Length: 452
Ligand SMILES: *Cc1c(COP(=O)(O)O)cnc(C)c1O
Image 1 (cartoon, rainbow, N blue to C red):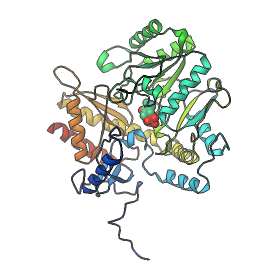
Image 2 (tube, rainbow, N blue to C red):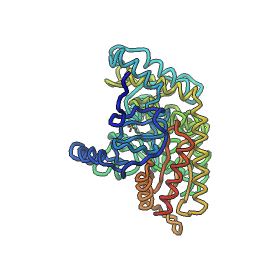
Image 3 (cartoon, helix red, strand yellow):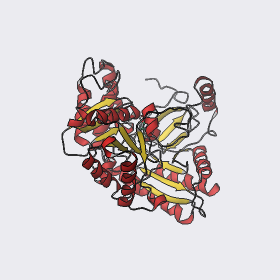
Image 4 (cartoon, protein in one colour):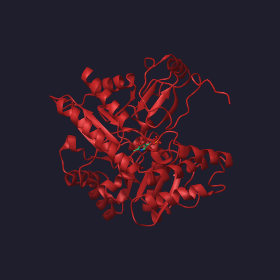
């Protein structure tokens, strides 16, 4: 057997990658800089990036770049690789499927894996009632279809979304999204019949859940009218909007109002789904059973797949041929999803998310005790954030947030920011990350805060 010289080859990803933060060059190193220069020339400036590296492998809790740096992954490619990056179960399922067939189009020649994903989602989503599932390619496409289905079912047109909400980048989902820069600015006109209601944001509004729900319902009744409303769409815990956890009682009151008024309640669990929040779905944390649930990100271990799951009688409202798409429920993505869902159900990942949440929260609250610029620590499971503020005025501090995130990345920790005011540092590690890497990442964050 000959041994292969490995130093010049790309390391294989997955959990066997050395689980360590290792910097061998400045970030970005020369090879990453080379790629970024090619990117600037070939890819439009509108497609930004958070970490200036050329990724060549990832797994466990690290991302390795072309220069040989190993960075701690506190973002999971935006909450996607919950099961882990290049997870062996997912890789094996994909390899087997890709050799079998890559595409028939489910609308032309159906295949088993699509149906099996639908059955699995019908089973694991909250609500003990008959459900059906349709598959798509992206979170935005799932949200668009949930709205289509709700409109067809109710015969009504209006849709209400919430302050700080994020639902995607297509025309309808831009309309549903609250934040102008960078998601909407200059890209209008937006889809009509989209309205906005105030959210429960306990750190900033000080309202109880029922009070915040009453405020939202009053806006909806006075400004839209229940009779015109097809659907209400909300993220149970807001993602891009700042990991805002609504006060207890807010979501149940909204669901109850929707039921009483014939409005379809859609939970957008694209970011919160699949064990991320320490429950299979965040809706469970609030005791709600949505009529429709949109999922994507964590569903297939990194392959593009999305779903709308919900009450059978609502899902069946559109006519034959009214739902679909060329690639929706692609067989390779479905194979990956079946492997990922099996891992979420049987590999202790829900407990792992709870453990990560407890560890991150304890560390962040420890830092907060001596640094009042951390105004709020919040989130659930492996979806935790710190809101950074001016300690005297309580005003959002976006500049500090950007500086801290940049310093973390320079030290080999990939962190993401979010929030309407750009002042939230969020942690979304893969559930396969080790405690040692989590602790190291928090040490780096603490040092970055101290130096900023
Ligand atoms: C990311 C996200 C979307 C959009 O998903 P894409 O796959 O990027 O289209 C929609 N809703 C929520 C809550 C998200 O976090």
